[in-house]
Length: 229
Image (tube, rainbow, N blue to C red; front, side):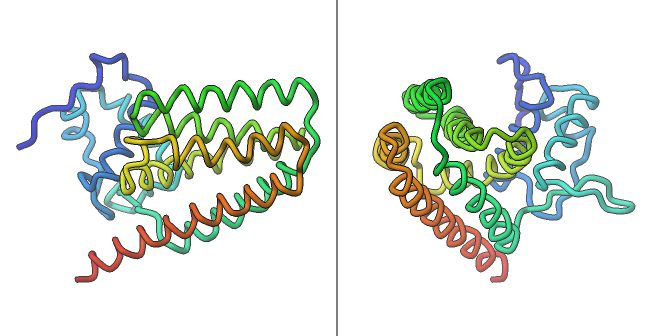
């Protein structure tokens, strides 16, 4: 039997962190697709209450990593290539439209702060803070659309992207040496936005999203192939 995973020692008792912990277990393969999430055993393993576990599971349901089945309760629902294609179709449309907007000085300040936060996060060489800062920068760019509804919609997309970004980070170990795959890639987009080169910014964003999608599709297809063997 594996040893208990104590997440309470690091003030990690909130529903968001419980969800993040479960997500890491899914990424690592500790929780397999179709596996029921047994409250009593998981709560004991994580060193948390069953109520905290339930709240974390609800958040994972919003990210489509968990689904509820009759007579089985919450089970792991690993996203498919079809899920990825649909998500990235929505992501591409909204981010390419956003990056072509003309930012106000205040919006540029927020984008600058988000980019600096991303750069700072890479010093940790840990996937979770880097992924969070990466998506926060993209959210700040989407906010250029100045639509509460679109920003909220992208906020929902972010919940799903956390899983995919984490999968990619672990698979390619981007967090070990993040300067080239993460900082440099976003530096180009950031520079184009700041300089007002909106066509170039859109082209760079499109290339970035497409490269991201292709690599993730390769990872998911490889996992599907391993499962079928």
